[in-house]
Length: 145
Image 1 (cartoon, rainbow, N blue to C red):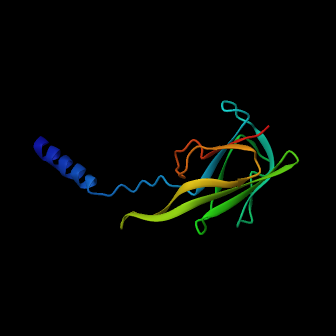
Image 2 (cartoon, one colour):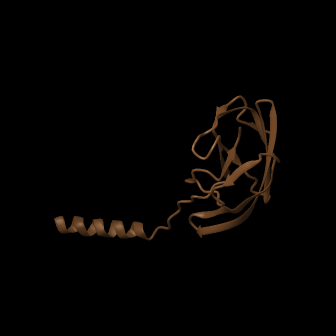
Image 3 (tube, rainbow, N blue to C red):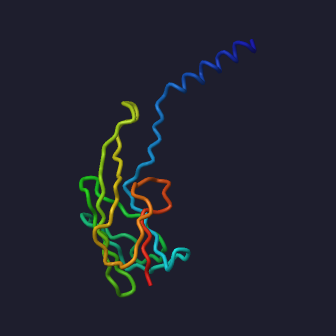
């Protein structure tokens, strides 16, 4: 009887190995950290943040040191307008989109890469990760006085 259980367990486990890995780490969210310097986070009290092409405002009335903002799945660029502390600043991002299929059972997803900043009213910023992935600590660090 013990041998039958072991053989059944082996068949069960090998059957699981045939399934495709459907873990998708891509995201359409840009992660922006605000900093005073390379080691110190800057908490900002936002009036609102606007994302081009969307009618909804983000982070209205929030005080945060980082934000996650969506990019358009139908475009290769996004402009973010930040209103805070009596200021209005903008960042325009460009990126590449590529649809990928892991397997027929997993379906398709969009991979966002080649992130760049062709325009910014913020004087200092650092692009830290050019691919939009779930586990990235940030994609962009913006230095604000």
